[in-house]
Picture 1 (cartoon, rainbow, N blue to C red):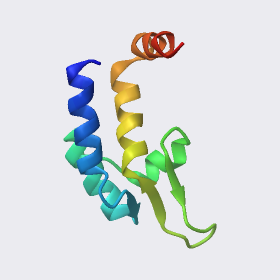
Picture 2 (cartoon, rainbow, N blue to C red):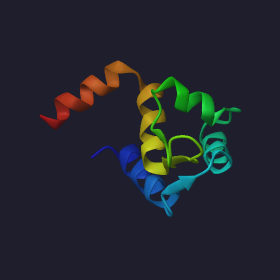
Picture 3 (cartoon, rainbow, N blue to C red):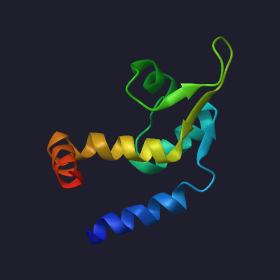
Length: 91
């Protein structure tokens, strides 16, 4: 196992304590801590690419899993080559 992967797994477990984020403000704050960028969770939800949902249709709150957000950020920052390599290693 890759030592860096072990560190990431430990960080995922620590960060994912209380995995569910409900509301735009908690999602925003979590993403800012991960990416050091000001992000708009509503925009990310509208793109359809991010693992951010809604608790109801008309007036619901945004909802997201910390683990899924972390994995999504890792996926987009590592690129396609890394994903292909991970798929090969899994087989």
